[in-house]
Image 1 (cartoon, rainbow, N blue to C red):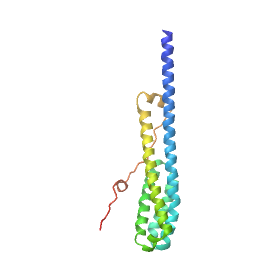
Image 2 (cartoon, rainbow, N blue to C red):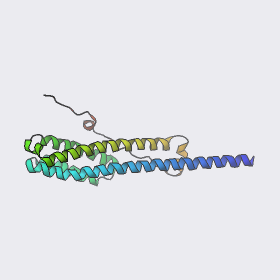
Image 3 (tube, rainbow, N blue to C red):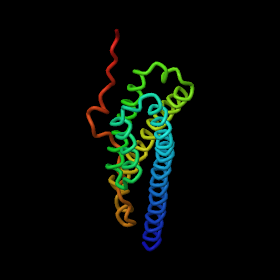
Image 4 (cartoon, helix red, strand yellow):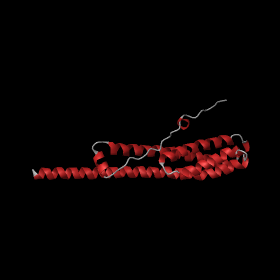
Length: 183
């Protein structure tokens, strides 16, 4: 009887260690994925002043658009809560799209090599950011599911594993497919 009890305790202990290690791995995957997003956000934030300066040189009187993008960049960098940061980043992405659309009105700007390179860098950064965001949200989904699912939730609660927040798009405008006008 005592050998059976010891075996059961050993199996439960090994199971607990296995689940704990899996939760730690998943939590670290979420942290690493956030780091990837942060790198892309930093890259985007570094591009904003250069884009604004390039557009300002050609379209200096479009101050409202230029200052709105700059203000959003500052607020997004300062945001500490993930939902606030996600919302501000989405607003900044929309502002950057307006900035690029504004540039379409200036043929000399559209032809400027520096601006074209900045535009390519921005498109690449946005693509990388979307990939990093999808990966992060997938890692969060796996981690959150694991800490909420029986029987892993016992280990998660014992060691105070907390759910991670998704980097979600809240605005319908950002969620909607872009309109393409042919003409």
